[in-house]
Image 1 (cartoon, one colour):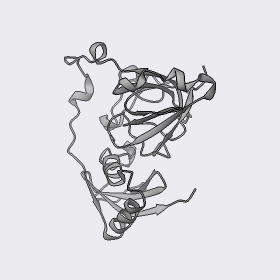
Image 2 (cartoon, helix red, strand yellow; image 1 turned 180 degrees about the horizontal axis):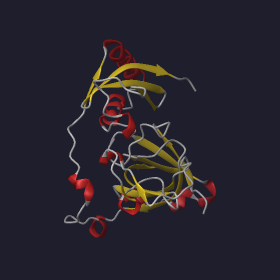
Image 3 (cartoon, one colour; image 1 turned 135 degrees about the horizontal axis):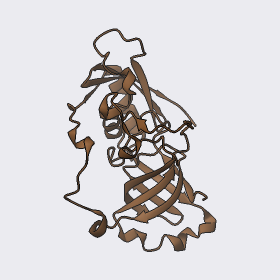
Image 4 (cartoon, helix red, strand yellow; image 1 turned 90 degrees about the horizontal axis):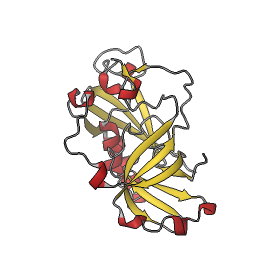
Length: 235
């Protein structure tokens, strides 16, 4: 199999990229289709759909060894059978994401709610068919049992000033919403959690790369994250 194209995403690294699609709804991404696949013709008819499935490759997955049980972040260290999760560490590193179709362009598509890192190889696009794929009474298994308190995001005065400058330079992007929705998902690995109000053997300050900004943050409590700096890169 060969990728049909590579996704351009606001998420520059694995760290901070949502673990499921649709969680950061303003996270737009663009997929340019290979010219030899005749996108002007092969995309015809797709504009009538509101959502599409993206089939893709976990290209940054460096774990080669198979593990029958994994540790989903939502289970706070508890284990679960691999095939009962959406862990990226699978026998075949294939991902599946349901995203909102924003626009069909001459040579590709723009989507929203993607949980994919920049440069992800896309294998296929399939239209979402709600009449056959939406099952209102379907059971959701163990994730339905996981209940967490909502996380609040605050900015220091310094970070707030930088945020406003960033927004002024990018009025077409919902930067604040993307930052807040991303941090509310708590991108930290499980091992870093639980030390918010006491001394930690690990670092307690982190950074998420979004577009051209590095968002530096710290969890003050398990439900309060504070952004204290934004550093910018120039491509």
